[in-house]
Length: 107
Image 1: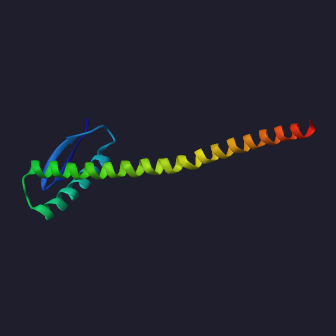
Image 2 (image 1 turned 135 degrees about the horizontal axis):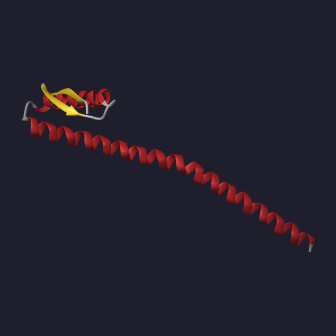
């Protein structure tokens, strides 16, 4: 199993990963390092553990917001499909009403 050396908050960590995932893991570590750096700039060096917890919470908050946005987009996409289904039902009912009306006229 390959290992990747990543740097977060000026510390090096060796992390094992699946074969072929090395570039992805490096990219993720760079993202976390940037977020930790942003947090350090805002609150200072408050210890690795607290920085990691705070960074994790900030990233989790962003993920939560993105999940809510994705759910809203999925609902927006589903709405036209439901409207199309409603329109088809209305059209079918209109056809039935016209057929009944025609039958009444003939009677």
